Length: 385
Image (tube, rainbow, N blue to C red; front, side, top):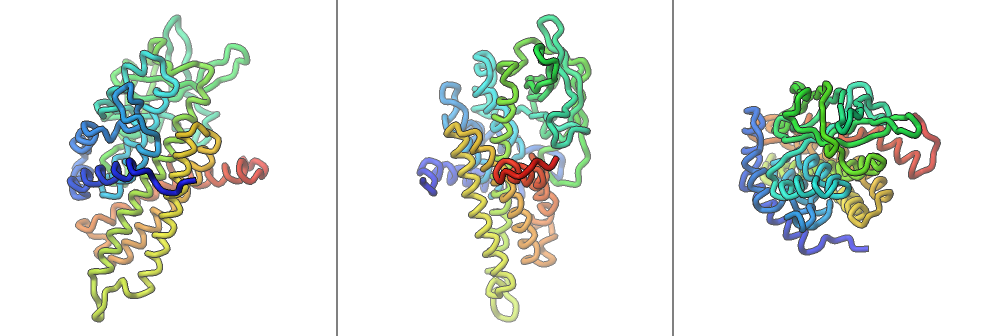
């Protein structure tokens, strides 16, 4: 087993980091606070091929795996320019279409995923279902050769920037009469499809939305892959989502830790840098240790997924997402503490992260549901819910 990244990924990280630092956190904060989007950075990253590193080469991508895309996501976040749609569009949507889409779907979407030309949102969360995907009420019914979708979704990222949304609905199994999950590509300009923003106490360039699907008529080719393989298709997207979510948190943890360490070296009180005091040095060292451990688990999850071990990837991705979410919270909290009052001043770029990193404990799966998963599937304990 190799615990180091290949030279190609190390070089990819360096190149992405150079691009992200050229924009920097000031660019991101200005765009986010003004209600804008990181379109300029996204477009340049797309032109350089960074958003398409995991798209198959035959469709214009880099031909890499989710580990490569996760590295790109981490480096953007570590430079203070997090782009939440990276977790959704190239990771979930492009991956599902690449693995299960029809030839026509691949030809239509993947080349534009590779260049970043297209953005696609992902919609699974519903107001009453919570973490229970078996209680989804968005339904898809056949009407001749078409599908009719009805339902509602909440906390869907970046719909205002997206050309389409990959919607998780449920269809009726002709044999059992039970509802089963199915995935549909829904254009954002489809009649009957509407959305409205959800006001959030977060400073982010990627907004959250509630979706409404009222008799949305879709052609047969809107269904992704085989109708009977939908559950496998769903988890083909959810495991990369967790891996990317972990990388997102890791990058923010690195950003906060770097800021804290730099400040602790430069800020001098009573004649010595404050970093000389163990009361500050030890918590930062602890964050560094926990960050490296979470990074290793994230890399393991990506390696499992890229090798085709979906079961192993599921376990590791949940653990990685948990560990990364926890260390991100500790990193930002400690960075603010090291800075004192400056930690809450806008110019230092830390205060707004206090709320943002809490998302890593909640989404894409809550800390409690990860613990349920590990208790049941890894430890073999009785199901508790």
